[in-house]
Length: 121
Image (cartoon, rainbow, N blue to C red; front, side):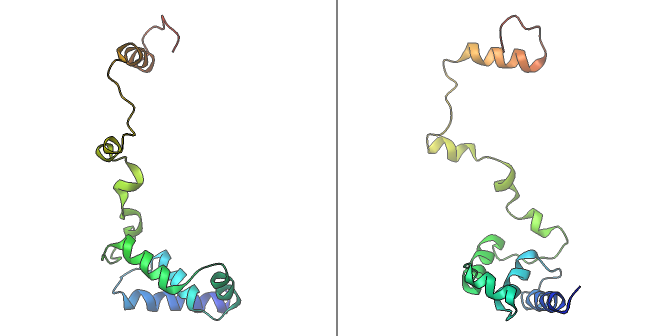
């Protein structure tokens, strides 16, 4: 590792301590990057990275939670990442209606269950 990377990692650790985190999350590295005077920091800022907007995004994603385990980042908003809110989709009118589509549903069940194919799936 070079001296610049070590400096960024140390700055990330300081950010974690300020936020009372027990682990260094990836977003804290970006905060450190936004503050560094190294060339990489200048490039990041020139491409739109700002500490203020990044802090707002971090606060929104974290929802006031601290990083207190090694897999805390993966647990954030897990439902939004891996599921669909069918109630919300129904409210927005984005659900495909199933009423009146009995034959299509039976065909899909037959094809997926491995039943003999008498019709094209």
